[in-house]
Image (tube, rainbow, N blue to C red; front, side, top):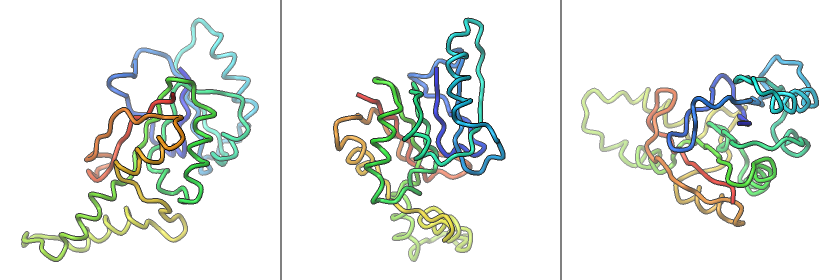
Length: 203
């Protein structure tokens, strides 16, 4: 199984309970501009072909320091799964449709996209409920940090698109390249239960 892990940082792909065979060896390409790795995309492509032809292959992770838009535009590789954890919200709303198109070009038919984003339905409700919180132990500072971080993030790396379950279906199914299979609307990730996790299939 070939896996593209977009803006991976230090997070490995989570299992997809109904689709992911944990015993199946994987070639995972982590693409993130934060890596020290000097490995070139061409080297990874060549290595991936050799790995795919190796009957004794075992799971392997490779890091690539490269802009993911450029990688998807140029790579000859296709993947069985694309993982996008806490990155899609950083894609400008003006580039969302192009980004989704690029994902469609590197994902095999029937392959899966695994997306985790802040769920703005939860965040909006937190904001609306803020003045009426009856808990005497309510920690406004902690609440404000979580809410501001997840809605806006830092000015140097802002959140640039808004995601809810309805928006996920709208944009990913817009051009009939994908279908949204299921969504966990209160998904706990990295210690915060404010995320939306969506499993999307290439059609």
